[in-house]
Image 1 (cartoon, one colour):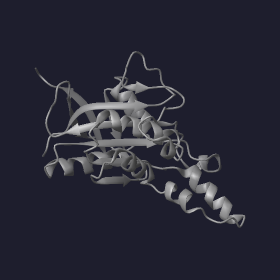
Image 2 (cartoon, one colour):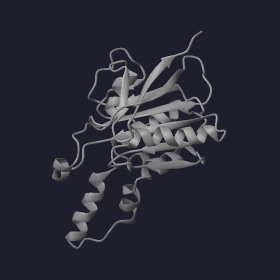
Image 3 (cartoon, one colour):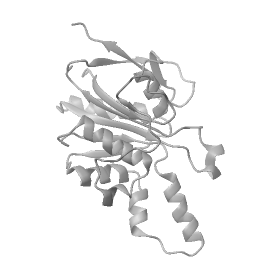
Length: 229
């Protein structure tokens, strides 16, 4: 089995204190400077944060990107459905930005990244799906790639049917070889049960608030192991 190393990471959420951690952005409105203004206005806050983080972790824009989100941009999708119900025409541009891979698509256009990009939704098992997919790419010879896990609260009308969540996004650069400061991602079996893993949980884990995170759907858990010098 190919070892998986966390080489670097960035995260955004206005719902945590940075506590001196430069890799966590806690501003309410991400700048989105990695995206030209004409494209930036198409993105929501999560999209702007993710594009900035991808640019920081891969300035050459030459790595595969895997993006997981349970709900995606549900607000935009619902607005279109409400409009259709009122007899309004459907905007192709709004539809194009509502699909699950829209954020990765805007990043690709802005950065010129033409590598493979994958959008994942797994009914609460997004983190486990990201790890499984990345392990496959690394085993196939890719030296490193970027993982994105993001989500935001679902629209209020559907809040009772989905787990409570807060806006957060985390981007990780993982590879098959350790780099300076890298940590090994250790996976173990864990019993089913517990709450759904969300981006904010991963951020807390990276910040050291939790020693271990687990996905109850996949019955897998993960912890970071420091490498011996």
